[in-house]
Image (tube, rainbow, N blue to C red; front, side, top):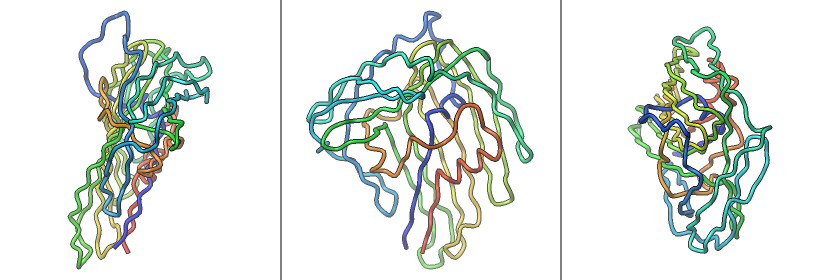
Length: 272
């Protein structure tokens, strides 16, 4: 029995989802740098994430904003530890936060407190003996599929950290639930509280797939985000865990169809 997974999400999604945090000071965020540990990582056929000591050597840490502007943030030590300064994104990278449009099959509503607020995500990458985009990621799986009959459920919960810059404080709140058909549902629960300046956020996507005779018969996906923290200080090469940060969706579109396509792209498991 083999399984294959593709995970795709974009920095733009972080504009839409978050959970409550204490009210920030009116002056904005004093979060101007990040520190962490780059780790070697691998994902096996059971989707278990294994991390270990960094073997990519010393190098540099870079950040790329949503306009594609790349800036060196700091140095990477040979053991994988780093501290990196966060630059203000280019003007071209800043995009307004808009409420998602809903379509047939969706219920609920999400509102934005400040329609003039603009944001940008920041993709972090490493340039060393091993190169690529890095992110703080955790993966938890729960496989309840009978190995003989191929019937049961399999759940994967992926949490990934994101860095979001806001030029003004902005809050979004509400819930959105969409059903593409009787076999596919996806939900979004959001209560963002971004302060002016840099913000930490954690995107969590939990997807449960129901199988019958090793065939997928239903899937439900729940998307949430918390702000103020990252899921872990261990950063891994996204290519090592089949995550592509370059894809996904922007903050301008979050329709029911987009939700469906996004969630389908996020988790695709095949059992043979």
